[in-house]
Length: 389
Image 1 (cartoon, rainbow, N blue to C red):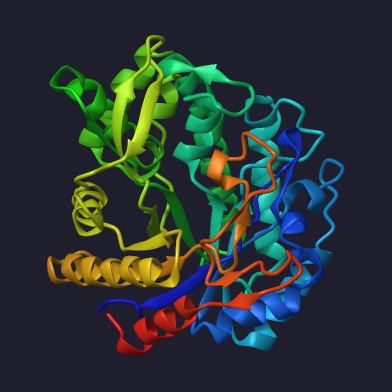
Image 2: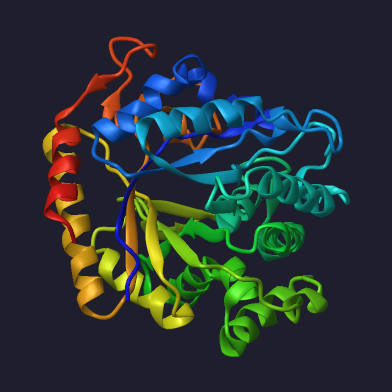
């Protein structure tokens, strides 16, 4: 029997000290926790993806200040909203000086995840230990647009090793102290469509790279072998390929208009990306992940910019695609409009500090970032909830 379908919203919570990123301050959420979470219920959602700011919770090794989590939980309870907690959303504490590459990262992550799960056992039922392991790796190493700007397959393999090691340890720590807690693990579902026939092999590689973390965590022998083969050639430790699976209950796909890319290669081999003119679609993407892993899945992030009519079209298309996937036997158990309200500077993937407010939320930050202007997209989301899947 399928789990009840969940309608979810998310609050963009990227907090990355080494990049001077603090979305919760930029969007003024820190002073509006209760009223912002109440907006989730106003939009018709029954769950919210919400993030712990690990760098603020653990300011010294092993010392945790949970006050911000406690406050958000009180707000969720008041709004009758179930939180799905992100424990790491790109940033790590300052004392982990090397970030994901720091030798202490994996152990610190596992200790933190276990402490969270133990404290909130029986209260928190769903955890995303680390948001987007493939994207978190690729942006820092592979594509390398974020520090430490490692490039290529070797860079990706170098960064992915501690990310996967940390995730395994964190999930095991959670399940040890709170075995009933569900692990909802998400990642970018990027597809790369080559603009020239001679780029077909590179397009296939870049697309398959999206599976790297999931393959190592929950993939079968064929998937793990295919991914492990090129990773080991790029310097990934072979022992990490052969490590045991960890229990993941639901996998999440992040799917935006720009998730499917047409791509060219620059002279240095860097992909040049644009929005795909002929995307495969969300249903086909869901089927691909279902065939590879056989796990329940949810749309962990999705939204579109522009006016309300365009965003309604995107939502209606998403709903139709999910219905198609479910009719084909894919166990789609939830959909997330991300973000609940607009975020800042994601138009440059946080590479620049322009203060650009992207009009992608169900509520806009207008006339100022202190405000929450309800849009017609709220009505569209509520209508989708009422119609069901």
